[in-house]
Image (cartoon, rainbow, N blue to C red; front, side, top):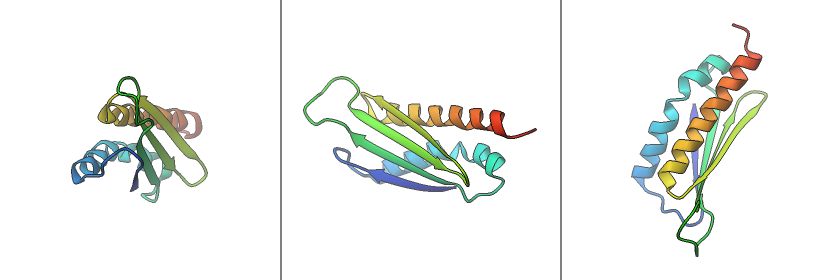
Length: 107
């Protein structure tokens, strides 16, 4: 599974953030391989700070898009901490993958 990371406005890119994203989203690889029957799926993750003048509330947004052969699964989450938003987006994407698998893949 190919992982593409886009760091947008208000977030500093660091090797620690890249490693965290790789660690979190690599957990989904088994599910993706089971659905796609190949390792050619692409995953793009966007991280951004939605506002610069607010200090409280959901100011970080994480969007994860999984590109399969015929469909794109998407998860978007907002939180007051960047890492919480990433974890929530991963969990939401896992739910979307399992929902797609249950609906479309005959066991």
